[in-house]
Image (cartoon, rainbow, N blue to C red; front, side, top):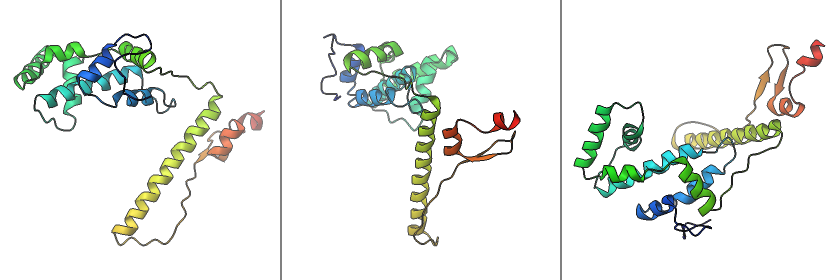
Amino acid sequence: MADADESTGATGRRSKVARLIDEYDLDGIGVEMERRWTAPDDERTSLRDLATVFNQRLLAAAMAAAGMQPLAGEIENTYQLLTDAETSSADRTQTRRQLERDGVPVEELQSDFVTYQAIRSYLTEHRGAEYTADDRDRTVVEAENVQRLRGRVETVTEEKLDRLRRNTEFDLGEFMLFVDVSVLCEDCGQRYGIDELLEQGGCDCATSTS
């Protein structure tokens, strides 16, 4: 779903998140949050984490508007100092004063920070997004997850080997890459390929000891 009409949703009301996306020029974040929230379980981002991501983007935009150029990790650290319950009052006050000296309207910014409930309302009511838990057998789901991870390992390894061949004195002809995952059960001593183990639903411990 495109971000062209972020301001109103199916209910016709303008949500806080939609309003802030417009005000802070956060183009594309709606698509990003929907994709991350509806991703498969092993890749999915929770609503609470998405609220943190969104608020950090607000902070980054406010700092940029004030002419600041934060270093890597500074956004995350500053946000933590402003919001973490474990931050001392002295550190929080110092952070607020520094931001205010740099031209960031801290009080207004913090009032714009959103909760995970606001993110959920935005995604479900304004973007029409829906998260559906995968109710298939867990063995089937995890087999697919393992296969995806193995595919990533294969892709990354091939890219690194190709880079070594092109840019260094690393010698390697045309090659085929095999990524094998084996599991050794220390109770019964049997070794299985991961596909075989998942397909048969476990090892032979139960039958071998009965």
